[in-house]
Amino acid sequence: MHQFRTRSASRARRRQVAVALLVAAGLAISPAASMAAPSVVAAYPNPGTVTGSTGVHDPEVAKTPSGGYLLAHTGNGITLKTSTDRTRWNDAGAAFPNGVPWAHGYTNNSNHVWAPDITYVNGRYYMYYSASTFGSNRSAIFLATSTTGAQGSWTNQGLVVESRTSDNWNAIDPNLVIDQSGRWYLSFGSFWSGLKMIRLDAATGKRSGTEFHSIAGRGGGAIEAPTIHYRGGYYYLFVSFDACCQGASSTYRVMVGRSTSVTGPYVDRAGTAMNSGGGTEILAGHGSIHGPGHQAVLADNDADAFFYHYYTDSGASRLGINLLAYDSAGWPYVY
Image (cartoon, rainbow, N blue to C red; front, side, top):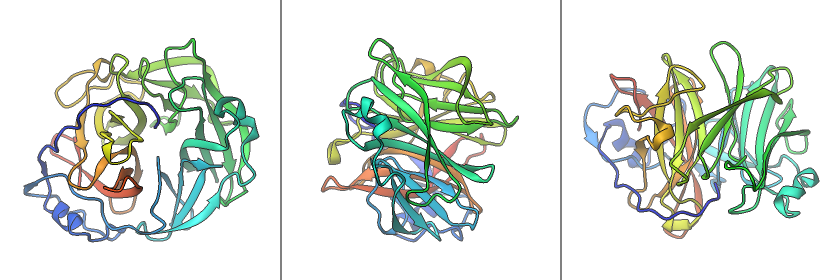
């Protein structure tokens, strides 16, 4: 979520979407929203209606046991929000209201930590999050757990993986994926040599062994924020290309590739390997929606819900939510 790189954002390619016109008109995309397949072509949709506390950066969402939603995002001690309907969001404090002293060696003594990933599994929430400073790859990913997800209920479980300035990769932007055999993996990365993946121990949530995969890269260019989502026989790798964190000048955009194996190789729609710069664009800036990215995907009752942040004309960072559907070839698009 934090590297500098300017590059003009692609103009939105055409996508199928009749439903998108409803979303663009500002209709809510609550779990009751229509999942009908679009039949006409239109530009990228605007975010669906969200209300309440909508200022976020690097959002990640988990479904709660009661059927609600818990959102975590970059902020002091990791900022939390909740929702009962995926439309109205309420502030819920911070995971670590007393700070994160164990991460200070990576944050220059700041409590501002980044890009949490949150999953509810085995009766508890697992949250992986990043500690770093802007533009540095002296970084670390930590794990915390909670049985409730509430402010102050999180227990620090310690370091999962770190990168040093001598490394050619960066340990930020974590995403937990549990494959179809129940094996746990963590993808992560930003710039440098691209996005990586390690194996985790499902019993502890911590690193297991020395397995280390490269799953996507742009030859040192701007790529980060991996999210892996399984559907219909494929693991889909969503990533963010180009410049984040520059307000309305941000050129973030969301790309995707897929593989039948969680560890890759991932290729885009044209067959280009994501390790060789490949990626099929599914969302980019349009109109007053600037730099959408740092995406998350949640399999919900009505559809795969697609979360991200974007910037307004004023430079404010806001929560965007749309839905994903899949075309006849199995490639996702946003509506």
